[in-house]
Image 1 (cartoon, rainbow, N blue to C red):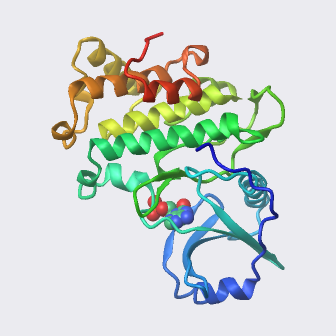
Image 2 (cartoon, rainbow, N blue to C red):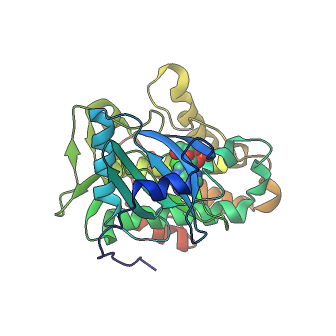
Amino acid sequence: ELGRQKDQELPLFSFSTIQTATNDFAKATKLGEGGFGPVYKGLLPEGQEIAVKRLSEISRQGLEEFKNEVSVICKLQHRNLVRLLGCCIEGEESILIYEYMPNKSLDSFIFDSTKRSILDWRRRMHIIEGIAQGLLYLHKYSRLRIIHRDLKTSNILLDSDMNPKISDFGMARIFTDNDTKGKTSRVVGTFGYMSPEYAMGGLFSEKSDVFSFGVILLEIISGKKNVALFEVDNQLNLLGNAWNLWKEGKSMELVDSTLTASCSSREVTRCLQMGLLCVQERATDRPTMADVVSMLSNETIAMA
Ligand code: ACK
């Protein structure tokens, strides 16, 4: 279950194959705009659907993210990480080819009122568990230790069975020993998902990913954005409110109203508790992903 290590080289695609697969890009469906360029839908001759991420212009920043993404993701294989099928580097072209994820990003399901009801409680728990497994693999079970640094609901893609897969490794950092902490003066990532120590001090670690995971979990359950912002004017209240409601035994008020028919208050409380543990201000108070995965499979969550 923990995923197979991938030893083979990353397949190289020719630019003409990608041109054919995407109808020369011009007539291809554009899936969206990714970190370093547009993402198109394509079809390989053998009938496999693909997503094609094309570096738009040779900017230093874009190229850095592109190379980083390749170097991280080509070493990984897990059912909860989007699979990189190959790449194409030819002349000015730098392109990444991924498995196609027909249900696109989790973001669109949680925040789009017409699609939201598709995600009942059971599906949401399945998604939360999948993200946790993928992240645990990144942190612990891949040969390397990887901090993603940009986890957010729009980077979680859903396959045809609504299984979640983590994507976008352009900002990830690889560690080859047990020391998985780092400090940077160039904070990259997405505000609202960043932990306080990372956003304000450039400190990233497994625990900063855990914070982002907590935000995603709370967004999945509440259907609300920015559930755990901190120290940004009155936005601090959002997290404060979540804690207060929970302490007052009113956790059901935090839950997306379309969900209440498909879950029990006990389940909700358990899950909310976990989200709140993950978004605690002090990194040392947060659980590890190993703790999270074991808590998800256990009946009780011990509060710190
Ligand atoms: O939320 P979306 O529709 O799903 O918008 C983003 C956009 O491209 C930029 O990242 C979509 N996308 C990215 N990778 C894939 C993929 N492998 N399969 C399908 N859609 C993808 C994503």
